[in-house]
Each structure stands twice: as structure tokens, then as C-alpha cells.
Image (cartoon, rainbow, N blue to C red; front, side):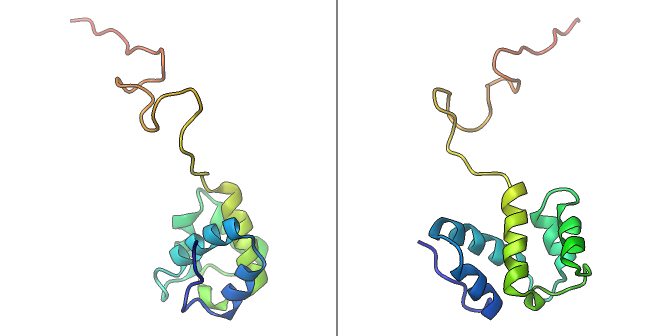
Length: 121
């Protein structure tokens, strides 16, 4: 079970209180990643957490400049950021049923059943 972050602020605490236990754990991961560098602006922090232009797009829809600090976010903005992050972040998985172990799909670096192109000497 995850616990709330101590120095995250009242907006984070209020946003976390509205989430289910599973969502709260994921929310805590996002918050700790965004707040890892408290002096940093949201633009670079979101670039590291959201793939492609998703972070910039979220800032634009929230009406925030990239230089905004995470401490300035409201509870509604934290929830909106979490919804954006959870919709684009890769979902962790433990493997596919009936398939081999998680990791590389095959020993030779190609998809199952595929073979490397022959080398002509």
C-alpha cells in the first residue's frame, strides 16, 4: 500500500483523496517523478514523464506555460495531469498468458518465428 507524499502540498493531497487505492498508488508515482526536482519547471518534468508532445499538449489545454512550477498546480490540474499520464503511460504487465517469460521475445532478437536475413559471404 502506498502512502501520501509528505511534502507534496495540499493540492496533491486533495487530488489523491478522490482516487481509488490502485489509482492513488499510480498517482503517487507520477507526483514523485514530477516533484523529483522541485526547482524545475513543469515543461522539462513532463517531457520526461509523457511521451512525445503529450506534456506540451497537456500544458496548453490546462492553460499553463511550460515554466509553471509543480507547486502551483491545483487539485483539479493534478487530476487532469494524472488522467493524461495514465492514458499515455505504458501499462505495466507481467507477461502474456501462454507465452514465454517477459523480456526479449526471442533469443535472436527478432519477433517469434522471424529469422535474420541470410548473410552472403
